[in-house]
View (cartoon, each protein chain N blue to C red):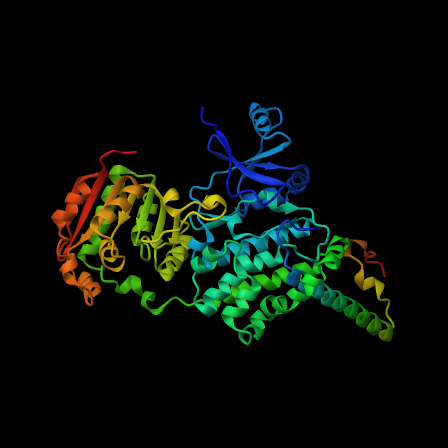
Length: 59
Length: 475
């Protein structure tokens, strides 16, 4: 993805930094969720499944 | 024979798309890569939705089986994809807009980018010149900007967005700079370093400017050294759009925040109620305009010195498409808000009639001068002559020349006698003898050289007269 306009090097680095922070935030949040789930003794995967993939209403 | 297909002078930056005119219709040629992105946006419904919502200009593909396609591909060999855009009635530029217009154009960019990004598409540039106003409604006009990005976390046009939108808004708000100062000096908008210089190093440390101004400024020299590794970084794929969406959302909020901070200067607050024309003369003027509009039905009206736009709105309600200009920014701001709320075809612009927008950019013709764009069926110049005579020091003959160059057919002009209160106020510290020649008879005598007087009416209880004229030699 190379621009035909001047993408501004400062702007690119800034956005990569934002992406890194956001990425780290997600990673951190997921890690915390897993830890909490582990401590509460629940399976973490179920919470992350999209609604359509969730198993039905059966217990 | 005059070539009926010609290329737009301002459309040369992008090598994958350019604008041209074919039989006075606005068209665009697209290279394969650019077309692929546009075609996908079309196929997936995202472009039709944006067009339907009025965010992007209506466009159609020129069918490959049509005669027109053959004509166009003969004229532009090597180009295979052509679009026809809806004509924008009047082309205006960011250095003529008021604060809210640039803010609205900025928000429009961010909205479109957010929608495109969800479909794995992106805008490859963010130029304020890619937005036009149809009345008081902003429309994005550059379909050639749509691309299929490699990385979705970085918006390649972010820095340009700052230069074209965010920085001019900040400079207007915090340094009192007009968009004319900002864009006439550099058609690409101010650089981040200029913003830091204008606002000061300490000021840009405040939270509202820390990321977009301070950090960009500090990171730029570092980035220039690392440009090659940044290139590799930008070519890598697979990043999610999440970070960019957060950034776009942040920018939208920032623009809205700036909008809240913009204050209209005190003299215009409540102006509509208190202005000096809320008198019988005011009603007479409006009746005069209504009669004129009803009888001569001009399709386009140019309201010079429009103030907060009472007569502009009146003309628009009577069916004309109106361009309203005033040199006072806040008047234009108020009128823009009014026109937007009422959804009227009024396009208000900030313009100094003694120094209107020049031709700018490549060959001086990339962005047309105001005088090349402004001629209208009718010109309305109410409560303006004394300002041109005294503040701008234009002689009556010069005012007449200006009107000649703007009015295709009709001119409604208010003559203000020397004894008028406002005339005297403006004259207070100036040589009165310079204006001894300014009388109604002499004024009419000058205008008679190029106009025919159709109607003449003194305004009750004032030293003012309304004149309706028609060009003697209609163009």
